[in-house]
Amino acid sequence: MRGQLLAEALLVATDPSQIPKCRWALFILSFLLPKTWLLYLASVVIGFGAAIIWTGQGNYLTLNSDSSTMSRNSGIFWAMLQSSMFFGNLFVYFQFQGKTKIDADTRLLVFIVLTVLAGVGIIFLLVLRTSVSSDSHDSIAAVEDVPPLGPLQALKNSFALFFTKDMALLSLAFFYTGLELSFYSGVYSPSVGFTKQFGANAKQLVGLSGIFIGLGEVFGIAYLAMLCSFFLGFGDSCFNTQIYSILGGIYADDSAPAFALFKFVQSVAAAASFFYSSHVGLHAQLAILVATACVGTLSFCLVEWSTYTKDKQKNKNEMDNSCVQGSHAGLA
Image 1 (spheres, rainbow, N blue to C red):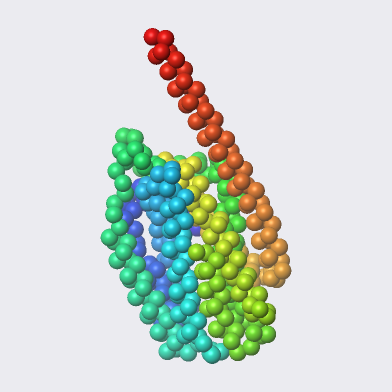
Image 2: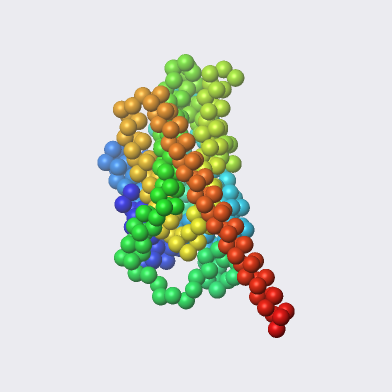
């Protein structure tokens, strides 16, 4: 979580294209040697790396989009990202088929394949084009010739942005996405795997649950569980694509701190959810999710409506000014 706060400052101090891209591969490799201390260490490493790469991703997406393509690009990015859930979980589904315990050979094969795929992803990141020129008129974040901020000033700006009205309201939506993220990634699928009513296929259904979550992003009790997986993914996709779009639109000139705050609040919520999920029953967790979903949706709609009315008034004023200037030119 601290990494999220430092991410924007680090992006200012360094080239975002040189962020540590290999940390996901290192995290996956840690599962080849299942040690508690190594898992915790790898979790810290990937957490810090994720703070930087997610903030850089949001900033990169904003710099390479304009006001008419931000929503489209956010949707394409999220669909491509979550399609990995379908293919990855399909692979796991067949590897875990008919197994009540995961043997060492199966674990080795799964994580070697995932590590290779992570390596391919790193290569693609290395060949990404640089951001569009700052003097482009089409860029949603056209930057004027102003001196660059230092890392400390960038960190201060992030804190200042956090206490603005719109960001405070959006933080409620961010918080829900964190709770929902931890629920579908760390609570729901394992709950399916430990449900005794599903019999010997319970472990296999963990992979199938992930597939349906992925399908939601882009029958008996078991079928009902898969349907819930689908809607978890669908809801997560709707929230995240809209959040990316509104952040890229409202905070075009401050995209790095805006996305850093988004991931920070989301990470705080995810950490809180992982903590209370081991102490609170499933029904209570679902009640918390429903309440935060309602509050988050309402707060997001308030910001969306406020932005819409401001843009509408701005366009009206520009039209009035152009009409006045035209009439003055005619009189002259």
